[in-house]
Amino acid sequence: MARWRESSGCIVIGAKLQGASLQEAELQWALLIRAQLQGASLRGAKLEGASLEEANLQGANLAPKRLPNVAELHGASLAGAQLQGASFSDSLLDQVDMRFAKVWRTSFRGNYFRAAVLEDGLDDSAASKDEFAALLADLSEVVPEG
Image (tube, rainbow, N blue to C red; front, top):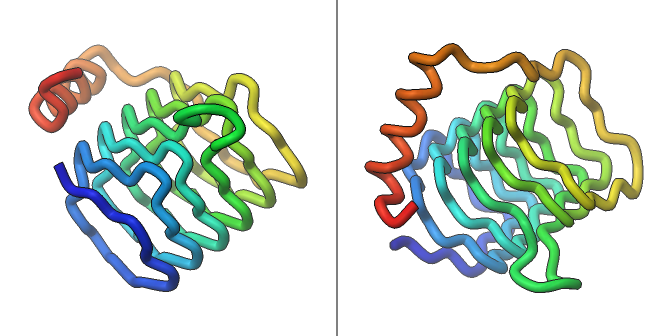
C-alpha cells in the first residue's frame, strides 16, 4: 500500500493511487488533478490550497483518525471530482470548491464549515444499478479488505 507523507506544492496528474494510505499527509498546494483515489484513506490529511479537480475519490475516507485530527481542506478544489461514497465526516471544509462534483452517498456528517463552500452544480443523483455495481467491483479489486 502506497504511503505519502509530505508533498507541499507537487504536481501529480492522473496518478493511480487507489487504496493508498495518505493518512496525515501534508499535501498543501499539491495538484492531484484527475488522480485515481478510489478507496484511499486521507484521514487527517492537510489539503490547504490543494487541487483535486476531476479526481476520483469514490469510497475514499477523509474522516478523522481521531479527533481533533481531522482532514483539513482549506481553499481546496474538488471541482468536478467523483466523490460518490466518500466520507468527509468530521472534516474541516474551509472555502472548498466543489462545483459540479458528484456527491451521491457522500457523507458530510459532523463537518466543520468555517467559510463558504462553493457547491454550484453538485450532482447528488443516484448512480444507475450498473454504475453502482461497477463501482463496487472496482473498489473490491482496489481495496480487497473492504
